[in-house]
Amino acid sequence: MAYNEKYEEVLKRFESKNLDAKNAAEARAQELRNKFPEVAEMDAVLSKTAIRIMNASMEGGNYQAKVQSILDEVAAINEARSAFLVENGYPGDYSDVKYECSICNDVGYVNGKMCSCLKKELAIAGYHSSGIYKLIQKENFDNFEFKYYKEKDVRENIEDIYYFSKEFAENFSRKETRNLLFIGGTGLGKTHLSTSIAKVVIDKGYDVVYETAQRVFKDYEDERFGRAQKNAEGEYPSAKYEDCDLLIIDDLGAEMQSEFNSSALYGIINTRINLEKSTIVSTNLTQKEIQERYSDRIASRFLGNYEVCFFQGEDIRKQKLNRK
Ligand SMILES: [Zn+2]
Image (cartoon, rainbow, N blue to C red; front, side, top):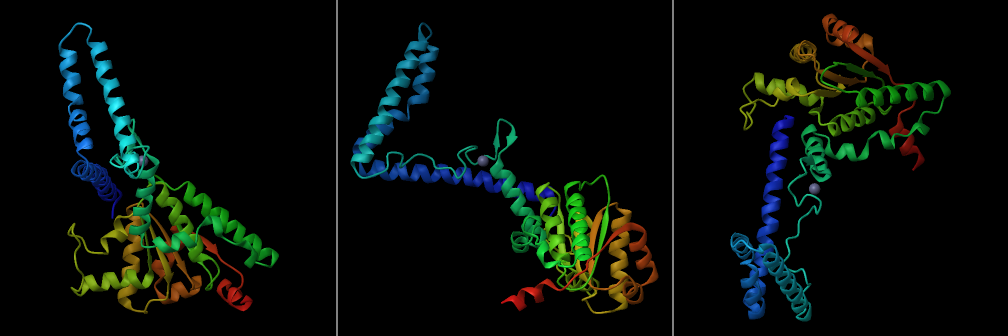
């Protein structure tokens, strides 16, 4: 989902959150009025506050004093109302509007600036639409562990890649296209660092799509053979691989080897280069295997347009298992 759609969807949710909070408060007030005639009486007076203030200010003369006396009366009634509720076993603010966010009252903005609660919701919506909501909680820059890279040169290598990835993520922008190719065996941190980059880029407000190569090719295949469903916007699932700001293809080479997959891969890589959009590809294949498995033109696309990181070390998943 593109950023604008996400933004509108989240904002719509905020509008209904705000309205729900008001309606729920009104329902609680009604409950109190039904139960206690005293509250009904007080609420009847309170409900006329706005009109009384308007009338008073139109009368002219010393209207400020009149308005002040109305406000004082309202404050006294509110105080009495709340005391009455407490006496009868209710919280004093029982029928107050209870917003989720007391800073912006669930509007999402304060003085024209986006509230932190809206920023957070947008990031979460971004994690969901990226396809790695759960993974992002588990694997990000903050919990990457260097201790699994024991040998000195292996350790230095992963530190280089870690800081390089961090720099890539923090400086990500639509203006500068950069592509990464993560090469290395299973369990060496390729997925962890891809996810970490995804989180930072999503938090910056960009549209990220993260998929396994298997899934990506399946989507193209389904479309090719008329099995794909269009979404509400009339687009095939594969459209997101071309539209998003950052596409991350995980585990290239795990998919079935076929002429179709090979040309689909060239299509994605090439289209994104032409559209000047950034892509990250991670794979267990060596450069030579990429060349043999796909084609020279794909290999040369990678060579000419991708910055390559070679992951080294011992499978972390195995290391963790052995310790148990
Ligand atoms: Zn807020």
